[in-house]
Length: 197
Image (cartoon, helix red, strand yellow):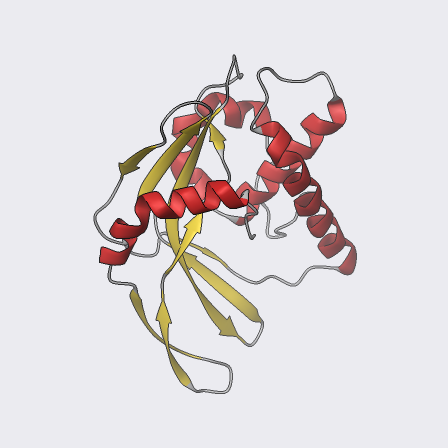
């Protein structure tokens, strides 16, 4: 699931980690496509959704972003994504300097995969709508100073984050750092269908 960060946040995060990212060996191996042709595969940088540094929010929102690496293999049944563990985290808080913490000095091995699974048209439409609504609401979410009474906003954010966690097992690796937030999300258990019910 592509993350739509604000342009300024994305550029700032990439600027903060550019030297670290440049130092990594990004070659992940070779693979065959569905025509049997061999290709090199390389890691590329991925950035998580912003996770609140404290929950519930009490004042200016501090957003924690996790950086990990992904590569994609195009197979007959669709693309498969392979991901590393997070190698850095960046915290952004309005009015304060951004902070960066390196979690690794190299891209580690693959720790999770997102495998293409056939879904129905209605499921695809639902997933697209969850992502569209979530991306539209995210700029408001990272400015929450408390949990709003507006149930639609709360529902949109819960579904957006739960859809991300359903598709991206990076959530399992960062959950302990944001336990109260994940408890508030109350995401359903994963099933073989990568779309929220």
